[in-house]
Length: 151
Image 1 (cartoon, one colour):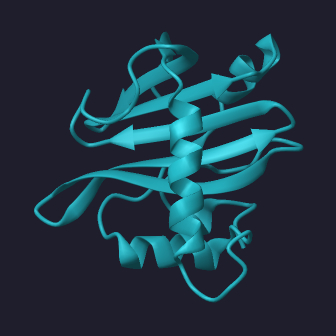
Image 2: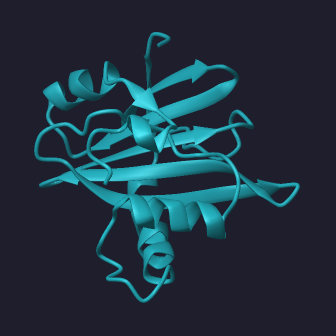
């Protein structure tokens, strides 16, 4: 993976979490609080486009809070954000095909990198300094089968 650079982001995690709650509640008659593989596959069917960037292994004590989607080009989503939390710490992994259009630019401390023409921004809100180190080196994937935690 490419090296990370530190950037700062504005309240993106709060607005992204609010979007994910509304998407999750509208998915199906299943418990909207359940964020499992079925949830992700349902979101992808309802909002076709790019896949979310997810950690291969979810760091200890973090929970997956959901997905949100932004922007559409030719009837497909071009940016997705996956949200995670641990206590007071909120983490959002935003990816976008159109650089600078949807992932946050300023406010919350975060990490940014570009891989294969896709911009990835990891925003960390309310964490301790070790959270940044933890998330900066975490292997990421768009392949749901490559995750050890999403069942």
